[in-house]
Image 1 (cartoon, helix red, strand yellow):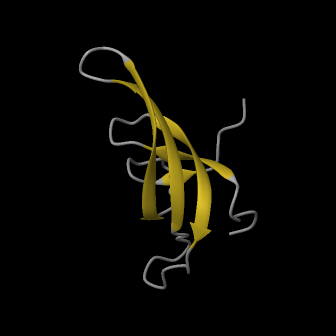
Image 2 (image 1 turned 90 degrees about the horizontal axis):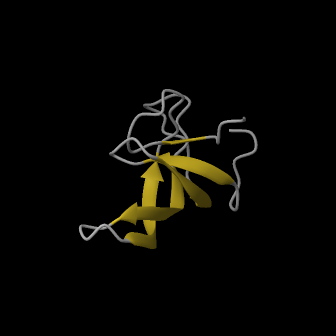
Length: 82
């Protein structure tokens, strides 16, 4: 995929449908069984409220995440332009 290199900012779609900022830290080999797929490893930045209602900042590491134009949970996509 053109422009997909380590260090690029993308969005990771969390399972609650939030789009979280992420940095590509590794690119994989496209999956032959899934044409157009581009698995990447991501560092995802979180800022969600914990059970006490306090903001909880952190990072998560996700591996082999597939690109999805439809922005389904558990996938990545390019950041939307505004």
